[in-house]
Amino acid sequence: MQIVILSVGKLKEKYWREAFAEYAKRLSGYVRVQAEEVADEPAPDNASVGEIEAILRAEADRLERHLKPRDGIVVLDRQGKMYSSEAWSQQFTKLESESYGRLVFVLGGSYGIHDTILRQAAVRWSFGPLTLPHQFARIVLLEQIYRGIRIARNEPYHK
Image (cartoon, rainbow, N blue to C red; front, side, top):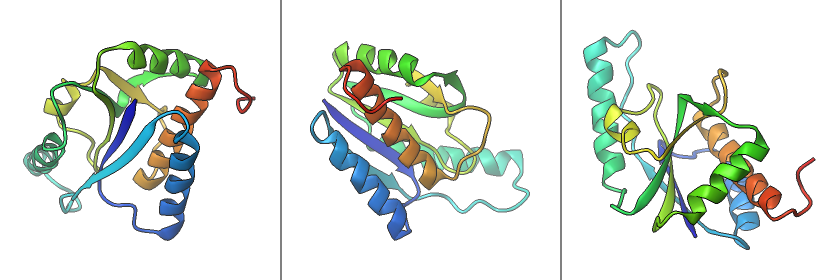
């Protein structure tokens, strides 16, 4: 199975890139992980509703260029479903059993993700009501994918 982490914005700091590489390495025995990044739109302070819509639309256009018809899309979304690690493991196993060419996990920019992308999602996943920096959310995402796979295989890691 191929997994794509499709994100608005870049992992700039070395320590985030190293953490991403570490989890990608851990996952390499189970799945192929690929990172794809698109540029974020400048987000002015006190943006109007129209400005926010334009920002979301521009970022969605960039994201859509990376999506393929047979992709299983998982969007990280504050309004999405919250999973325990065990429930996520079951959801991931279900996604793996579908006929997707690859699973694409989409992380939006500072204003979230445009409805055109949300409507394509097979799963909308929330890490809960807290706000995480986007770079950290990517690492948490990879860790939870790894944990979910290990749980599904009854391998030691989850405690």
